[in-house]
Length: 565
Image (spheres, one colour):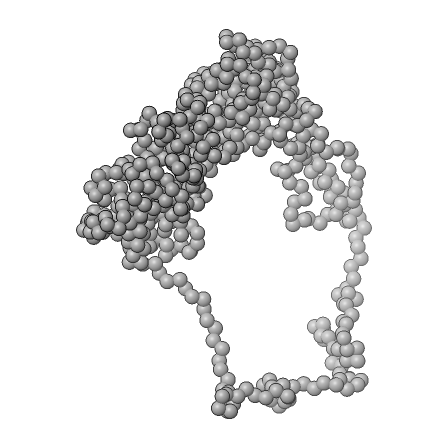
């Protein structure tokens, strides 16, 4: 997680982010119309407020940024005051990041920027019990005064007195820890007292006994403990130097050898010049060595017959040969071209049917421009694969290049056969790192939904509440940490009960007389066009012929999504 000053690009689609973050805490029964309108206004003005705060010298904007998913996790807006008070204007954290310390870290980093002589105030909705418990935990108290606005909606005015600092000692214990608070609490802190001399061993351990990053000690306590251990070791070393231990010679330290046959006297060579002793055996040992003293070659056991062949003769000894492990064969351009053609034929059949396949294959054989692009790409891929180990990374690169060539042929080379069904701007996303791609823009580019804007909802505050409620009840079962990109209402009467929606993780849909369906991008196995509809892993999907093909191409693209390093 990265904590840094905010910038304008952090707050794209902030309205959706805020709506998904506040909905569970603010959706409580018994709210008045004014309170609901206030919540709607908070969502609608969220981005304007954040952008305006970035350009004000009296405000601090901090963000928590997930650098792996390249998405906003939380943000804080603090207004510096010129007098005795500064104001915490906003602190909002993504629902999926509750309880992991993001809110606390943003708050502490914001408070570090406030003068020690200033108190910090905030106005909070009285029904937002989760937030009240969180701020109480971190040193804010109810001032007993009410704060409101021009609409007359009351809020609780909480204050954090000057001089509390930002360490763990600034926390105030509460009767019950709210679910989002971090462990350990103040009650769980260890009890410290003067440490006696336990005569610690002076040997150095291979691994550190104490890990500062995972300890509940603060830096001062940790330094004090380190100093104590250093003093104890030094004292122990001085004691050892004052009373040196007696060292025994190598001769006296020799161990007495043990044997399972005490009747056999053993002679041990310690490497010293001494007269050889005579070996004596007090009694017969009861065994004999299985080799001829005059012939040092090993002999067969006395009762074992030599191996024979099927004809009765003695079997000739065979030499055992050592075999090296197989070296993987070189991956050639011809092999990759054959794999590309198999993939291309499969996807063209799946998208346009077997009847249209000959026309596309004829175009493939005769288009010189595509041949040049194909040969350059496959030659570079072959060189790279042969220079790197055959592992998961190589497999991903191989699949990615072949998928991009297949997509290029379908979008650009075959455009005349399908009447420019796929916009050319899709090719801008080829060969790019997934961590640098704005997934929302990619989805909208592939589906090209501008022509159906009247039934596509991306603003979940402005859209009719009835449609949103029906969609979530009928088919949109997104996880709490999923970001919903849009809802496409395809119901006959515009009630939101049929249609489809895309999030940053999955596709959800509901067709007439069909059960609701869902498909997670990275686990989709097969997408095929069947007549006037799609089959997505055996599930029926229909959004209209042209849109069906765009959805199929989008899913093919998202199947290769890789956010790993």
